[in-house]
Length: 241
Image 1 (cartoon, rainbow, N blue to C red):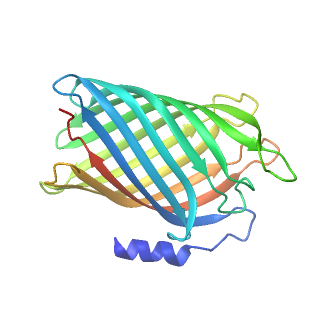
Image 2 (cartoon, rainbow, N blue to C red):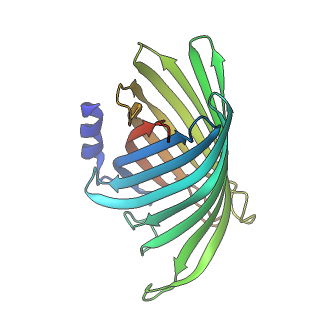
Image 3 (tube, rainbow, N blue to C red):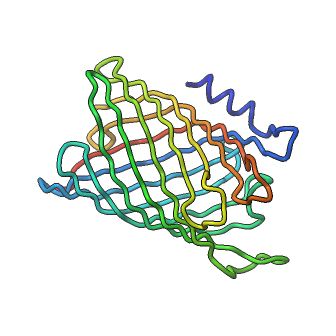
């Protein structure tokens, strides 16, 4: 893991010879799925800090909260609200800081195949992206509305009683606007999941993610950016009594 982080730091600051920036950084996250007493209702929380050039530059910060309903183990539907604050960090970024407001709906359904688990997640995200106008970019002048379906296929392979191998692929599409390319981005991840004895943090996941983002304009097809990311996620299922 330390070798991977060192590689990220070495890659930081490199760009391709084309107009596509290649970034490298760290995304640190917290995910909470907290049962409400003995009921099937869940308080679902998430926070993410995204850094670029290793950990030197800020990229974005996200907070998310919602309610979930689990009708059998790990089968859950949820909905909620998210806020993400974006900061320019490469040549493909907007030339200003801007907020994003998001409503989401999500369905999780795992499939057991022997010792392995296939986790599937289908999400729908209604997003309002703030836009500012040149030349000063000093205030928000409009919002771009997007509807983004997301599908994640995750394979969890137990190696020991406390350690799992994790592989997932996450595909983001564009449903709205209709005049933009349908494919938005792809996130491919490989890493480890570590179970803990801590009552507050039940699991730690860490590994490498390759994020490929596509341009939204038909007049400028191809990749918008490539991002090499070390992901570190703290996961809690501590109940609320």
